[in-house]
Image (cartoon, rainbow, N blue to C red):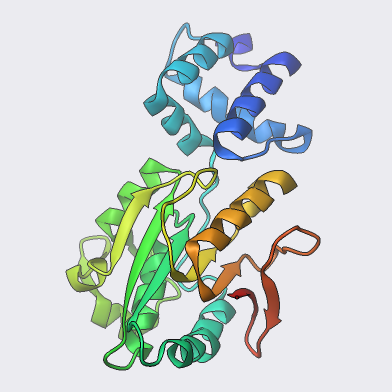
Length: 272
């Protein structure tokens, strides 16, 4: 293959523009090597296909473009990742929402945006199952731009090496032991609807009480970040909460969200 898999500046500009326009993911000179290496992997099994040929393919074939996005998206996650967020959900957000909703609807609507292989929504589902008193219920929509990740999430099987962080009582209660790992029990799985979604587009979701979108907007430039936050605002209920990654911030961004600092973690809220 040799020179076939390496692209020049003009090729890079073509690819990065297409990826940005279609997904909001922003490749710059500093992370060009990631795109280049993923593209090299993609072409390895396509003898005779050049960088230019492949660009033509992904502009015409939507399924192939989705598979290409799968290959360039970094998917690092684990159960109970950043425990402080889940402490804030338990001790601050849920009690606040119960006060707000008292006498009204008794179902919490939650969105795990950029759910990767499912650890985050399953973590949320376990925690909500434990802490919500009757008659309160919850439903979770979990979405990602990676079809491959969503398939793993829907299957709900995690190898022994992937279940670190799950407290033993939760593991026994919400998982069945299987060969080589653990499988999420059907009852917990039924609380989550997994769906393909590109954050660049409107999700169609409305009146959400909690949105988790952690370690996702770091891949977007400021314009795309602002667009995503505007879409979140539109999808959320008048009194609701937003969690983003602990290394992410809306500071300096043109959004209506209010920053709040709790005893456990910082987050944002929509209070209108």
